[in-house]
Image (cartoon, rainbow, N blue to C red; front, side, top):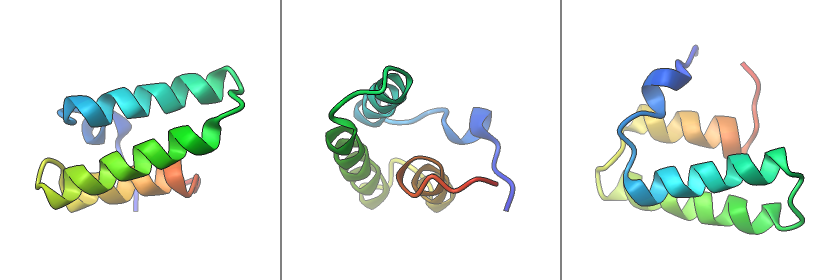
Length: 72
């Protein structure tokens, strides 16, 4: 399945966007606590999906791209 980052990363809840930005920054800077950043992001993705704030497609995209780090 082909994903479009510019679409699927838009309109995220503030807390999810912040956790995603924190992970991206941690990856860029080779942070020593990437495991914590990943756990935070995973929790935010789950909360946003359960609360109906993101779609199943967004949830799947975020998991594949950032949690499982699958390449398309």
